[in-house]
Image (cartoon, rainbow, N blue to C red; front, side):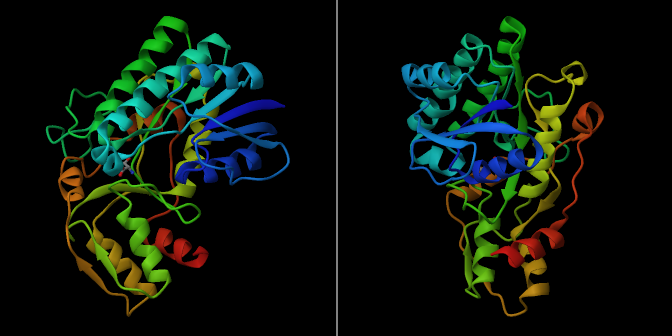
Length: 308
Ligand code: SER
């Protein structure tokens, strides 16, 4: 049975990842986070871990001796702008601590999500490329862009099999996301499910790349199973399903909830959204590890409303 360590396990991705790991692999899972345990089940245990602490990180690795690591602990774009130093410490110091521990304790494979936030306003808006020299404008994007270079560095220098996907906005119903810029999509559908009107913090015509969580998790597991020899990218691969604007989402929701109402009141997140691409070039992901997705906008909305 393989041993899998997850950091940031209580976040939006963690709850979903645990489910898909358990349905696809026979694994013993150690969940870690700075907040209290929320996941129960056979073969799943929980420990407190603040990845900012190198000492604590190594202690957990030494005790559990994981074969694989999913390092999800991260501060996202909007909360990162409120506390840039915290974003720096969690996203970079924390990531270096985890990567070092992976080398020290001979971890086979480590997954660290990256983001569309690594692109800045200078990047192409359509089909943003995998290889780029764009300059991100948020602390979140800066730390993730630097982290991508660390993935390549740890692969080249230590042979550590680090894998990363640039997640777009992820739409999911289990655990609400924590202060990203793309989260309006989840919020809007949650309001619709409660038959409550929604005030959107982005302008109606703001396009961003998005994906349903189910597709993101299936892609992640498929990518983690891919033969290392086929992976030509060692920074991070692009993934996305569709470009979404708040207005497109509203139109889709209205098909299921005809009386739903939205007002627009853009805040500081508008500028962040405008610095990101509308779509990403996913051709390397399709070629190297067979990336695909199933949910379009209407299917996403339908499934979200059915589950909320
Ligand atoms: N969902 C993230 C954010 O909005 C982007 O990767 O911060």
